[in-house]
Image (cartoon, rainbow over all chains, first blue to last red; front, side):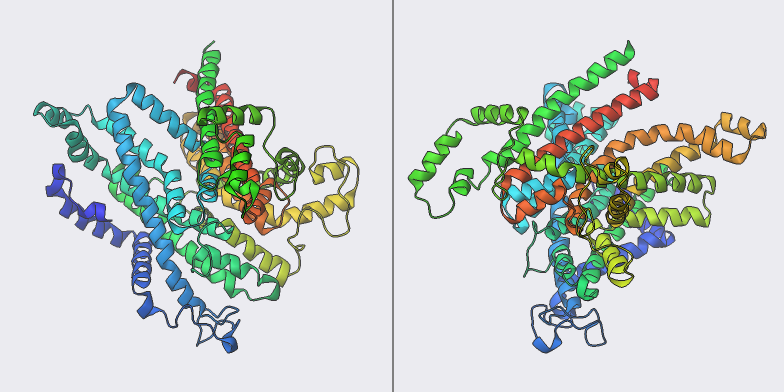
Length: 297
Length: 338
């Protein structure tokens, strides 16, 4: 969302007004507004986890082991007596940080290369696009799995792996947008007054690609979260004792046959809630930012 | 003639993509940290021995020589040896592929059988409760990780209700696999008339294929809905209504047939989702397919099967997308000219 707040120079006057309009549309589009509220709350909970979580997430207690949800432990406890709600709140830190980080990294790399590709065309573009085809030849999760397996399980590597799988999305998006707007009059004007190419791209062209990028990034955040959770679930991503929703679900899976349902249900529910929220906000933003898409579902 | 040109042009795109794919898997396998010679030699081995193994494996050669060896090996079916099973990865693959195929086909079938009518009904009854429910199901289906829905299914249908078998593989306890014709237990059971095996295989398939099928159903339903909406507005459908043809005939005959054409285009995408989802669902249901094989190898740091699995899936994905494009070109001649 920081991208919206930073006004692109070419249309700086109109942005505060459009921010107000976003607010207006969000009020009308209540599912997206609710989803946005959930995301904001979850971010706050992650940041202030130490104050919000009812218990110390790592505090074990033999007598509190494997308790079903109750008034004391809203979401129950695990085999070590750790409070599940507290662990889920603390896990939000890793999950959200990686989702945001991977998306930001992929966006930065993808937009830069995409802009180069769209401006130069010719051989440079051809080679870049064949590389993109090769990366996209892998189903995203499978590629992330291979990269994490090769690099090793650390938070940074998971972030890197997810970013690599998402670079093509932004690259193709920005390339297409640049191809569309590079011939427009204001781009010509910027060239004529003697701006260097990098300035034309970053100051004049890229800011005008922002709306579709913002929508895409919001939707991609959900995918990033799902990918990370699945990686951790199969034991590749973030590992215990570090709390992460996917690996917590995997831990909980062991207790299905003994009936401790809360252990796998709630961490997974946190994933669904966040992914759903990112998707709904993305849809809402698309309706707002791209008037052509309004009413089309 | 135009089709031939289209075919060749599309084929020309496949070659560099496959080249890129193998370069990526090669890089992930050989050039990244975690020296394969050290892995092979095991810990606590003096550096001279490691250097010797490196030489034997050709790791001291320049990268392009290594790549060439890798590629010629892969083309000849040499995918290396699995450290955990001690057998060639290719053999392990051949043994497990039918399981993956059976699960994938069953899931695809479920996704199509539910997704297409759902898309049609959502379009016909646009903006009614049914349409909204369909959309909610679609949105939720995409947001829910398959490992989670799989666990819920196991908890509800196996643990609580007892209507599903324990999530442990392809056949119930005490049953022998049928003689191999296709490797698909359901088909082989049918061919040999072994109804017990057919029943058990279907029973075992039930939960994983529903979980996987529902996870890829949403894009199919959405595509059918949007093309149906367009087609229902078209003149020839209006003519069919005007001619007084029965509703069922118009919707499911004339309109649906044309709405299915774009569905072909997303089959490649759906296949990608299925392969990715497969790995996770197989591990949840202890399904003995190649995805589960790759994931088990992760636990033992056995890199051969993982990288082969990734290469296999990517090559298959490229081929499927190529076939999809060709089929689309066959069905819709306009595509060939683009």
